[in-house]
Length: 249
Image 1: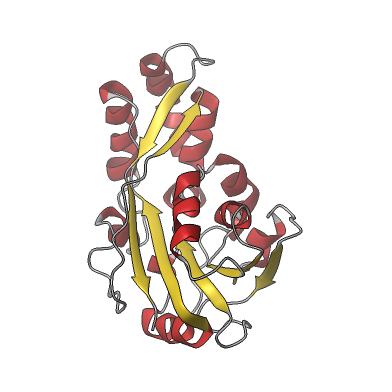
Image 2 (image 1 turned 90 degrees about the vertical axis):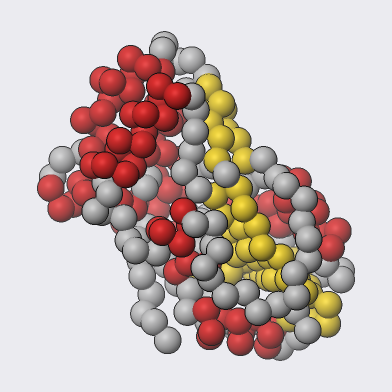
């Protein structure tokens, strides 16, 4: 099994505050496809953004992540049981989960071990549902500045697993019969400060800062401010949101 690749514990609070939320109708749709709404497992939960979405539809959510720092930033909820443990070796009981959900985390897993764990914990008819989001878009001018940062300045600072996200997980094995899913939209309405906080939450930004001592977001801030408009102006930020859903056993 591969070791835990921890890219976010060092800025767990920023990650919690600056990251967009998965669309709420995604979780509602999953609840309708699961055999029941007794228990959902949020594997690789980070600081619980998706866990809250699941808790709106399931009686109980077990949310696991190997980063204690990330879980330490997760919001408490009476239906959510947070556990610091890897997705490949969970403490869930065999045959207990009606849904296994992974949000923006599958590319970090040892997939063979994780798929074996999914088969162990899934109850008959359970779902494995995976979602992630790619690079964002605002408009042509903002996107040009953001893309120069994303692929130019930070091109060498992204971990290799980021390419799996950029390809929409098409290269990852998914050994469960597919369940067709509708298309969902992922969007956040942010001002300039919120957008810049999101850029700073990238693992590549933090790696670049640690490596060079230079904040790459601060470097592009003047040009970004010019194309954004008034700092308090709220603009729509959109991400390509992709999913893979399968029926386990």
